[in-house]
Structure formats: C-alpha cells, structure tokens
Length: 302
Image (cartoon, rainbow, N blue to C red; front, top):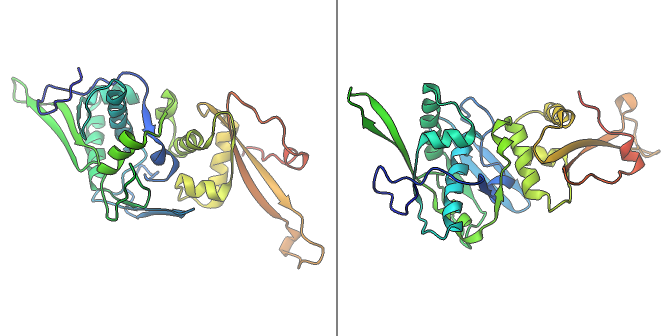
C-alpha cells in the first residue's frame, strides 16, 4: 500500500513493485566500502575532474551491502515518479519487503545487520563535486539524514519491528528526481560479491547499448574502489572472467606486451613492460575480433 502521506506508522511505501533501479553516479563511482568488516579509513577518489571524499562514522563507512538500502529507497522513489505520484524525501517501508527484494533471510541477525547498516548510512559523511539537479554542495552530507526503526508492542510486551523510516539526502533526491539518469539492476546483483557488484555497476554505467567498455586495469581498480594490491586485484578479475557468471556481461583480460627499444637499458631479468586491459562486453554482443597481437595473449584465469 503506497501513499504520499508518511506520518502514519501504518502507511507504507512498500511493497516495491517492479525492478530495482539506481542512479548512474552511485553506479559509476566508488561511494561505498567493499569490506564486510568495519572500515575506519576514509575513502578518496580523484580522477577526470571528479572528487569524492568519504569519512567513516562510529561503525565505519557505509559498505556495498549497506548500499542495498539506498537502492531499495531509490527504487521506491522512482516507482512513485513513474506512477505520477507526489514524492518527497521521507520513506517508510517494511523490513520484510526489503529482505524479499534483496533475497535476505528474515533472521534475528538480519534485523541486527539492518540496524547497523542504517547507522553506517546515517553516520558516513560524503563530500563530492558531482552536481545533482544542477546544484553542487560544498560541505559533507550523509546518505540518510534520518533513519529509524519503528516498533510496536505485542500482547506479551515483546517488541515487533513494524517499519523502517528514513529521509533520503538532498543530493541523491535531486539526482533521481531532476537528472533522472536511472538504470535498472539485474535481480542477481544481490548474490554477487563486492568486486563483482562494482564491476557489474561499472558495466551498466559505461557500456553504451551493445558497445563494450575497455579500460586499463589500474583505472578499473580505482573505479571499483578496491584496496587490494594490483596483483591481487588482477587475480580476482581473472577469476570473475573465468567463471563468466556476471549478469548481462562478459569480462575478459588482455596483456599488451610492449617491446623494449633496442637502445633502452636492459631491465633485470630482461622483462618487457606488460599492460593489462579489461574488456567488459554485453552478453548480447561479442567483440567480433581482437588484434592478433592481443588475441594470442589473452590472460588465462588463475
């Protein structure tokens, strides 16, 4: 049952009907931590004129799993807009419906994790020069300026969670309502690991139609927001490419070996420079052919 009035505990914006959808900027850039454990170190991203700074709250920075809540709220908002309903920044939904959409079991631990996720989303501070709705912000903001779990008392005095009440930040609210750069998520997204989720999001935000997205592996590591070493990140990507289970997209790695000039000083061990490229291709489209120098050097999965 949906309604624009959200002051009544029993007036809910859930259940969500239709696909989970997200805003392009939070797909394309590393706004969330990738670790399941509390990450107390700030996150910074500076590239191509884009600046992002993420500061942790008491429980650390909001994680890629906490992002599920942001995507769910964004989907509720987008559904309202598409149905022609009035939409504000306050939303009320049931944990039951959120768990249904994300494929989460309704255990006591899941409710605890939901509470902790809301705390991280409220406590994490974000500063970015990415404009939303034609406006920029100089200071910091949090994903959810307000976040509450509303309970009712049962006959035996026990508490039962009735609804989750949140307020969406101005920045994301403007981006969704005014910019409307909205992309749908495949339903299997919620079963992916952290790196796979980010690779999928980058594919969705960068693959134009059937055109592949080709990027240097070092650039991709920064876009993903990975804190792994370069060799470890490459190993993980090779595993993703070999498994070939990313929804909607194929991932391939190529090593471009740059010959050493004849007059260049010899390196220890006589190694040549190796540059790794990552090619992400929509499943509806295969790259017709690679240059022979690349096709013969496809990196085998570890």
